[in-house]
Image (cartoon, rainbow, N blue to C red; front, side, top):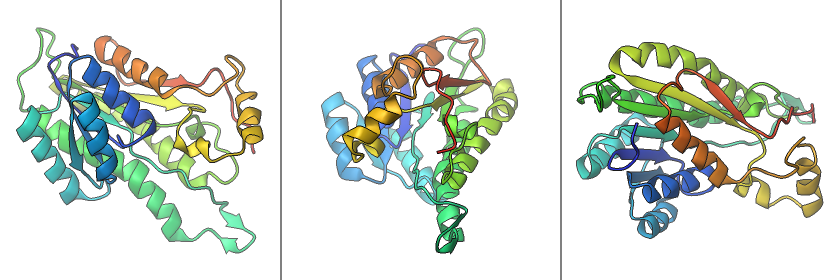
Length: 254
């Protein structure tokens, strides 16, 4: 599909891959709505890239529905949805202090998995009522974010790996379900990307992690993620698949 002129929603747009994607889509002429719970952050980014900002708690049905309605009122129905909202706390299933608190596991599932599903269900419902963009019948594209941890979850990533593995499983199911409406569904599974999650680590730890990447031996850049989003949008045969963006890394147990 063509990026220019179409409305787009990016969740988790206050930093990292979400921010890079919002800026990229805006630079390509999309009418972008940045969504996040960090309203100050997305307002600043939106002002810089010419987009709009909307508060959205992806774990809440009411918040998502309201944010989507406001975005549609401003930009029209979103033809592009990129789900970048996510959290990645580390807890062993059973640690030194006993079993992982169940509420902490639920929180990760709520944000990463239910948040992704929440945005998908709202956006797809609106998209089904829009006219196709071309003779093939395409109406829009949904791009979700998983992780290499969906495949090689490290010790301490039980909740995170579970949430991202579910997003991988959801990809082909949703693509099949939405095919009749002309909506493509793709997932990107990033490896080590230079996001705020890694900025607080000591330099030695960051370098050690980077050295685990076969090639290139570095963290990925959020802009590389954003460019892959752009290619998925423009390549109509990409549907129902998960693309690893990881420099061929296969994560070790710890």
